[in-house]
Length: 148
Image 1: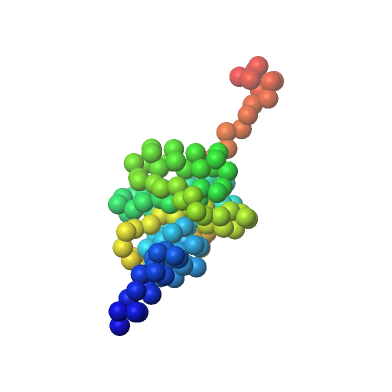
Image 2: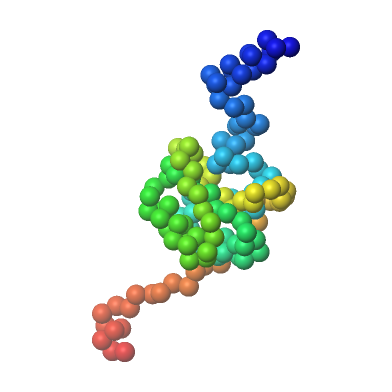
């Protein structure tokens, strides 16, 4: 029995503390799927229409926290850091994440306990947003401005 405990102690020192579902934690930016309210991949983060969905989820769950993928472009990170600050929500930049493609998770709205949301993908959870368009501020031509 003492030999097993010694071996466990040595393994822990060599390989680190064993993790539960390490593949799931890697995919979901260091947390578990059951703790997620909303997820956005990097492609969806570039589309400003999904910010509306994120804002409504934050209003529903004000104690939630944002996890931001640290491997994506800094301009995109900065956009959502500013978004988190203006909406007064805690955020963490996960530096161990990867972003090889735009289909990787870029942002998660999570809780510190299990919430078991059946659908977390922003496009599936808010399908009506895809059909909407943000109001565009049409830039007036020179002649339109001249004769206004």
